[in-house]
Image 1 (cartoon, each protein chain N blue to C red):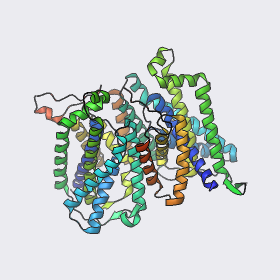
Image 2: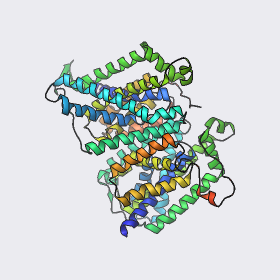
Image 3: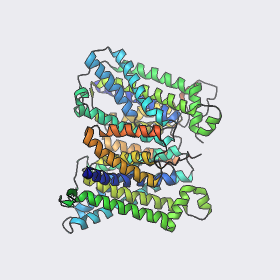
Image 4: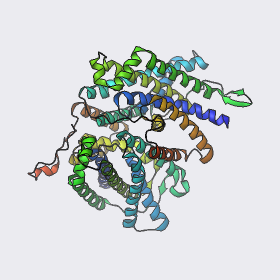
Length: 285
Length: 296
């Protein structure tokens, strides 16, 4: 039972991380290879605040997410006005830089040996509540004015700009929102696993999240969530060796990209079941 | 001081191979090829395997070095062409948006890394020592032979590449296709063949850099992540510009060696990252100063 509990909790945390990736990739069409680094920032900041100053969990959770958002600002500011490639390159470099900082400030963060002794503050109910809240926020954002502007600029940046959308600002706002959510996932992970190590946050984690978003369908939040649940919990339950698991993911993605480019879910959302109104199409050209 | 600069140049030369291999593909398909790192680790292992299975005990010293590098270059070319065939050919046919190229290249990069992890395990291997650790004495300063060879060999590889690009018919075709694919194919250029040739060149460069990186560090599946140095170099130099990539890479090598002296190797990546951010804020076009337009 404990085993299933822990799988469910980790799946929930992954779902929150995937939401961040979905926002960056699915809404604005940018690729971040450093999403896991924001998770590291959130986790380490909150854990260290608790360990050094004994601050209560809700406060550090807030501060952790805010810290992730601030670093998001640092990374996002120079890059949103440039070609989309830059944000991928810069976030990739950011991920490496964060890991090297964590590894080298051993007095503060425990270095490569990891940060131990974090109190356990997160359990399954809290994670479920968090997932629901974050999902609600992201879904609202997607359907709001901002979300639609994002979809417009993803499809054609020039056209969106000429319709009066402030493209750079939208990209930055979405990126910040996504970093905050990912940072929160990091806080949850830190206070669930009670142990942090820099090696956990390398770019393969970020890339795995991207793959998850992509398998579910880049236009569909529902698809991203379903594929997050399936791709994280199923292999755990079936006890796949991890290297083979990722190999299989990659082959699935290659098949999808070549033969069904919109992902498994296309742009179908679960809300269509009870909504008569046809949602705005955010399809790629 | 001069020794450090020399060491930085030799490091930068390896980075420049990475950055140019990356820039070649960027030029022609207008996207950042993240599978380049996978190609690099793959070929580093291929060179090592060739050493273990074929060359060990038959040849030695610099002949062995040449044989290993050539094997890796050929392996890299084949891998890259295979990647193009599996990952990008169909996308080009469908005129898919750029983000699909992205996803495809990331996936292929991870795939290669994991194939290596599965078949070679995540152990560390080390390349044989090709050159005696003797130093050459020039003007009272000593330079290590390995650095010297690295610098020479990278320069030679780049010179061959530039010759192919600017003095041959194939190079002309590559430059034409990178200018405009559709017009080029209307003019009777076989775009598929040219793209394949570009990937082969980029893969061969990746193979050579893979061997050098494997010699400098040890051999492990994540070796390809050093491709991030190539990215940083091309951001500094200007995306998709080959001269810029070389200059950026040499600068990066020197700066890294200087930083290791000043703040230590641990903090170096963070400092390099900050330098890159500043560069993006101040001069986002890079040194070469050409703005690459988003594909409409």
